[in-house]
Image (tube, rainbow, N blue to C red; front, side, top):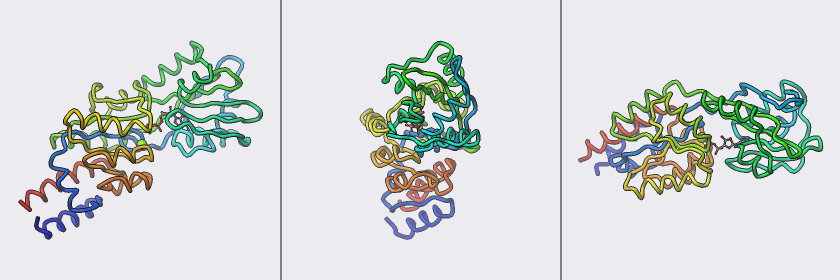
Length: 294
Ligand code: ADP
Ligand code: MG
C-alpha cells in the first residue's frame, strides 16, 4: 500500500467528520455487504420526550409521574431522562431506596414506601404484574405509532403506561438510501418493541424483514455473529454502551461521535457529528482511496 494514498484518505476523512483508527480499516470497507444500524441515538436522535400518560381508574397522572419520575431520576437511559424531566416539572421528586437498573428491561426500587417498577411489560410480568386491557390497548396504539410504551406498576399491580418517543434524525432516510446505493443491505437492530422498530424502519426505508427488535443488550453482539455465520460481511453503527461489543465484533465498526466513550473505543471509525450520512461518505471514500492504492 502507498502510505500517501492512505494519508490522503484519512485526512479527507477528517474533513468529512470521520475519524479512522488506522489504515487497515479501509480494507474492511470494500467487502461489507450488510450494515446493522442501532435505532435509538443512531437512526433517531435519542432525545426522548414524554408524550402521554395512561393510568388505570383511581390512579392520578401526578402520582404516576411522582413515583416513576423518582425512580427514573436515578437512571441515565434516554427514556429515563424523558420521564424524570417531565416529572420534575410537575413537582419535587422523592428519594429512592434500593434502586436497580435492569439492562434492556427497565428500573425498579422503593419510592415513598412503594415497590415501584417501570419498563418493559416483561419486567412487570416478572413481578406478576399484568396490564389490564385498557393499558394493553394504550400500549398497542402507542407502539403502532412508533412510540415506546413504558409500563409502570407498584405494590403488586400494573397501574400506568407512559408513552415516550424521539424523532428520526433528519438525514437518516437519505443516508440509508446512500448506503443502499453502495450495495449495502441496511438492518435495524434495537432492544425496543417490534411495532416501534417497524414504524421507525418504515420512516427511513428499511423493510420489516430487516428489522431485528426486542434484542437484549448482551445479545446485540450475537446478532452480528449470526449474520457473519450466514456469510455476510457486516458493518455496525451504534452509539450506546450496549453497542460496544457488537461494534468490536463487526467487520467494520462505526461509532457515533455523539455517543458513549465505550462505543467510540470499540469502533474502527468515528462519525464525529453523529450523522449517518457520514457513514455512507466514509465507506465511499475508503473504497475510492483503496482504488487509488491499487
Ligand atoms: P435500545 O436498543 O433501543 O437502545 P435498550 O436495550 O437500552 O434500547 O432498552 C430496551 C427497552 O428496555 C426500552 O425500549 C425500554 O422499554 C426498556 N428500558 C430500558 N431502560 C429503561 C428505563 N430506564 N426505564 C424504562 N424502560 C427502560
Ligand atoms: Mg443507541
